[in-house]
Image (cartoon, rainbow, N blue to C red):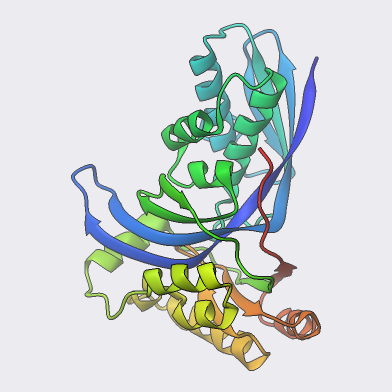
Length: 289
């Protein structure tokens, strides 16, 4: 048996804009996305019986093809043309579920990267991202990592200059938010504003953290949903505790603040633990493929 371990890194949205609906039922998006130093540990163990399965420290996570990690493995072996090999994926989850941090997509991306290494890299990074797009909209970004502009469903990616040095204080409330539900509510109400995506890109090019923070925005925060009041309260608490800016990531429910001072971020973490059961610090990272 051959084994390999991979880190499955979470993502944050530095901005999130929703454009028009599409004929396939999806929406065109424009997002600046960032990989962060919060990860699941993913261990892959090959077998020669063609069996695909998964296990996790969270009992409610399925172990079959309903799990994106298993779906990614099936897609990899299909592309490889290998009907004999299989894999068991064991995930030690740290990324909160239902947070808008692409935990499931990150696990799927780790499976693609890990299998590619186990089989002596038969596929390029671009091909792995293409396979990932068949698994889920966030998987291509999670394969590539770093800082990127994501368009289309999220699968059209353009690398961006790295995020300036900073700390993210991530807080997830006890509730989660259904992505399809939030899209329905977004479609039913006009958007009040949009993020300045191009301004964020220009600020990244100049390495200006303050200018990035001034332009951060997530259009889902304007949706008419009672849970957005809790999101607003968490954002306010982060700002009160020294964050330069605060925003919900993805369709939530996690909210994060950006800090340029490590000690302020640490103090903020202690204060925010009373607001959210899950609170942690992370930094921007890139991924070695």
